[in-house]
Length: 292
Image (cartoon, rainbow, N blue to C red; front, side, top):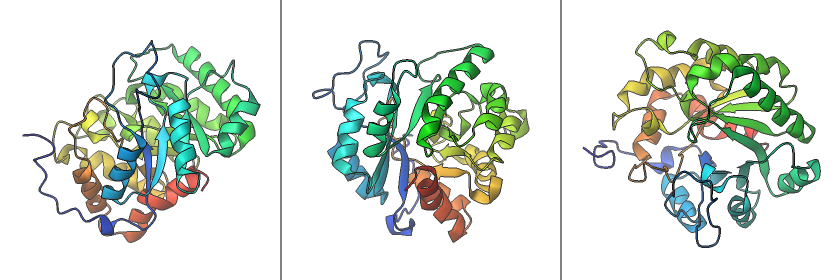
């Protein structure tokens, strides 16, 4: 059964809080912006026009463009989309080399709506020693700290979060964002059995740490995501719901046939009719995180 056809949900976009944000999506336009020679795969084309159509369908009018790994450190496609959308309804998360990118360049990106940098180890299959990883993250934090409102976004496996915990005490104004529900390789019924879970909980108690409630299909094989209920509810209730942001992960790279509407409906359901929690998940936390 496909994920698209399996849904029995009655999704109503009007049930989302007015002015909701999609805190993680991508644009790729190979015709105008060729992918990097180092790319490990070729994603489907996902233009800004298609992104805006999807945003309207989901009633998620505000968008955070995240640099995909296939473009490397060339952020041209992202910046083009962000400038066209304008900071009134858009933000961006770029990729750059902290050893070669100047503060002047970061301020130029800031002016058009960029508010973060992404470090992606998981989808590109990169592994690092704990000491080297912490040193790299400190370099990024030092680079973006002068901008005061930027975040360091990490796509890593939950199992290595234990090694990241020390940097929480060093954030000093930098916000930390963990992608895709923490990205466990396998979701356990007993969350404490998942390596990294206890560390993630402790990290999220810090007001500057956020987790994206996104990309369930990268973790679950259940088209209705029943196996993610415990994990998602636990994240929703840490810090009284102040540490989570919703994201579609459109265009669902490598899972292009996915329809994310069932995930939106599940997240609304797991808020258990708590309108304040729904507003935090879909709008209010995003506005705080992305400096809106």
